[in-house]
Image (tube, rainbow, N blue to C red; front, side):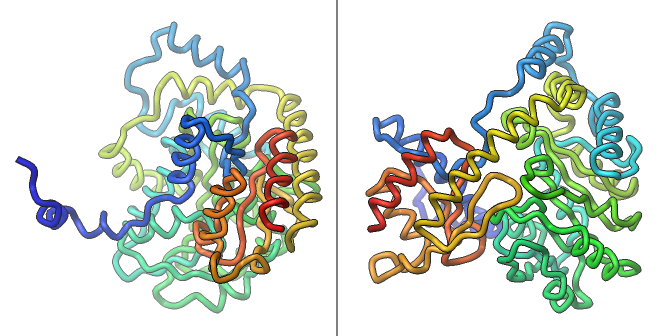
Length: 390
C-alpha cells in the first residue's frame, strides 16, 4: 500500500529537504530530454569540454582492465598515481608533496564534501566569494556550517572583502581559480596577500583549481606554492583539463593529518576510486603536453569568438581562464523576465539555447555562457540569442 505523500515526506530527514538541487545538473537533464524529443537545442550551459578523452588514456584504461585491475585498490589511491601527482604538483604548481599528502577521490566534488564533513562543526563559518559553484554552499549546509558570501564579481580576488568577513567563528575560506563562472584567474599578488593575512591564524583555505591548465593570456598560481602554511588545501581534478569527466577522479593535496582524517571518512563512503580508471589518470600525467596545448589554442579561438559576440549583446568581461563568459543581462530583465533564471527559461523556450542563470551561482543579473562547444554551436547560439533578445 502506498503511503500518503505527507506522511511519507515527514519521514525524510530535514537536512535532505533543505538541500537545493544542482541547477546545472538539472538543466543538463532537461536539455538531454528536449534533444531526445527532437528539439534542436544548443547547449551553451555545458560544464565539460566536447573533446574526446585522449586515445592514449583510453588505451591504458583498457590495458588495466585486460590486466585484471578490477579489484579493490588502495583507499587513498594507487601509489604510482599519487607519486605522479606529486611530480606534477612540483613541476606545474611548485607544490612540494609526498604520497602522504595525497588522497584520490571520485572527482573533486567528493573531496570537497569530505573536507567539509571533516572540518566543519555546527556554528563554524565558511567564507565563499560569489558568484561561485553552488556545490560549495550546499556542502557547507550538509556539514552544519554557516556560509558567509562575499561579493567578488571582478577579475581578481578581492582579499580586503574576505578580511572584513572574517570573525572568530571563521573555520574555512574557499577560493576557486581559474574561476567558475567568471573566468577570472587570480593574480599572484592577490594570492600572496591572502596568504599573508591567514598566516598564523587557525583558518583553513581550500583552493579549488579544477581549471588550472585552462588559462589564456594569464598564468595560474597555486595558493599552496605561496607559503608552506599547513592550513592550505589544494583540490584538483582530471575532469576539465584532461577531458576525463566520466572517469570521476579528483584529488587533494594537504597536511598528512588532514589526509588521515579525511581517509577515515572516505573509507566509510566509497572506498577507493575505480581501480582501472586510475591507470588512465597515470597515463594522462605521463603524456606530453602537445595535445593539451593544441586543445588550449582551440579553446582560445572559441573564447575570442564568444567574447566578440557577447560584447554586441551584453556588458561582459573577457575571461582569462576556464571556459565560461559571465555577462551582465540586467538590461534585458523586465516584468516578464524578472531575474536571470526567468530569462534563461525564456531563451531555452524561444531560442532553443541553454544557459546557466546567475542564481545557480549564488548571484544575480548575469548568465553563464560556455564556450566548451564547437565554433558552429557558438555562432548559431549567439545568433539565436540575438534574435530572441531584440
